[in-house]
Image (tube, rainbow, N blue to C red):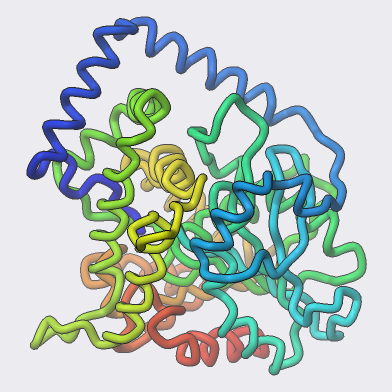
Length: 403
């Protein structure tokens, strides 16, 4: 999900936002808000460089009883299926499939990085296919998603930058992969950004303690976005947006509404009838997110998710940053062949979230220019490929891994 405020000022929502924003600027003054944000950003940058010792922790250490209860209820389950580690930025929830660590296969480990607003659960079906094919699988939740919790700052309304994503992944791999060798990485949507910057950092001259992953899959990566004017406007003031929601957390329903609406175009539609192809899957997705956002009677909202969504869209998926992400991706494609890395760009032809129809020729050109890059189109699949038909995606991924 890339579009955050598609109808930012529509109906009464817009009036609420404008009033709240005006009140925020009136109380604090524009200068004070900006200076406080800069101070906070510098503090975050300093904390990023501070290494907190890694280590396994119990769920009771990672989450309060209230947080654990709320998240479990939102996902309609008894509790987290995985384990927790503490890293530089907080607590990461992860799962290794097969579930018994140390029982991995000789084929190596595949790392799965999920999309915006989702969690490691989205990869359950794909993980089953990969395990059946003989691989060990590592799934994990981003901070503010699933059961992972950001703790290296004054609150949950933070900047989820590409560097922080890579830090989290490094901390996790340092703990989990002491015996396993990493053979592959699959990143869906935002996960494609994570994979891009991980390869870029690990392939740099000064990085000598990281081995590049030989097989990388970018599944509908978030390299492009079509956003309306007002959504682009919100991209230009991310700091003010964070301060707004920090001071008025009740307004987080605006983030939720935008995410739900963006999800409506995430599922592929028949080009002729305009009907969603995977209707039941789309309904299940909507029902799950209604629970996560506390819109089901008796179910409290996920305590971190709205902040996590805003943090990523405002710091990693901001419109002005997307061209830079593409430049980094092209750079790693240029270097990949010499470094022994092969990349698969896997894209659903009905993807409207990251519009396939207007950008696929660009990717095809990259594939022609760089021997390390392959481009495969998933027919009749939209942006939410793993919710729509995980078997189709799994077939293409496993075929790539085995070649």
